[in-house]
Image (cartoon, rainbow, N blue to C red; front, side, top):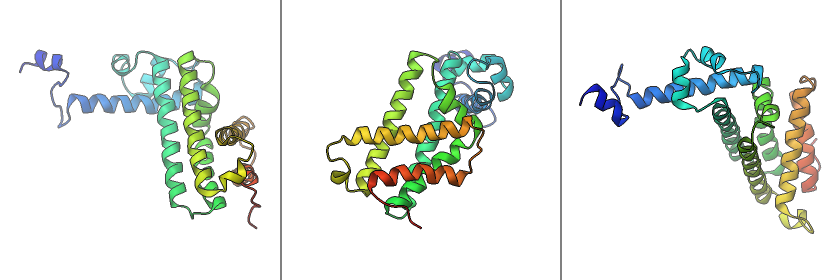
Length: 217
C-alpha cells in the first residue's frame, strides 16, 4: 500500500514502532495536559491555541487534528479532570472501612486534594461557567453523576428511610454535592487560607449531620 493510500485509510505508517493512531493519541494527551496548565493559569478566555501548543510542544496543525477549537479542548480537559477525581474517590471509598464517617472522609479527602491544586480548582469550579450552552450541559451532567455517586454512598451507609422521611434522596444528594462544591470554591477563592484538614472536616460535618451521626472524637 502506498503512503498516500495508507494515509487515506487512516492507518498511516508506523514510526519508531508506534502506529499513526498511537502517535495521534499521544499528541491529544499532550494537548489535554497543556490545557490543564494554560486554562488553569490564564483561564478559558485568556488562553490561546498558540499558548496551548507552545506548552504541549506541538504545532497548531496538530491541535486541529484533535480539537475543533479551544472550547472542544476545554471540554476534554474538564471531563478528564472530573474522571480522575471520581475514579480516585470511588477507589478510596471502596478501600475505606464500611462505616459512615470513615467512608465519607475518604471520599472528601480525595476531592479536596484535587481541589487543592489551584489549576484544577480554577478549571472545574470557576472557568466552567458561562462558556457556552454545551459546556453548561456538560457541567450539569457531571454534577448529576456526582449526585448519583453521593446517593449511592448514602444508601449503602445510612438509614435512608430515616434520613429521607418526607424528603427526596436525590435532592438531598444534590444538596450535599452543592455544599461540597461551594466549600471548595470558597477555599480556592480565599487563597487556601484554611488548612486541608479543616476543610475536609468542615465538609464532613454536613454529611454526618444528614446521617444524624456525631463526629468521632
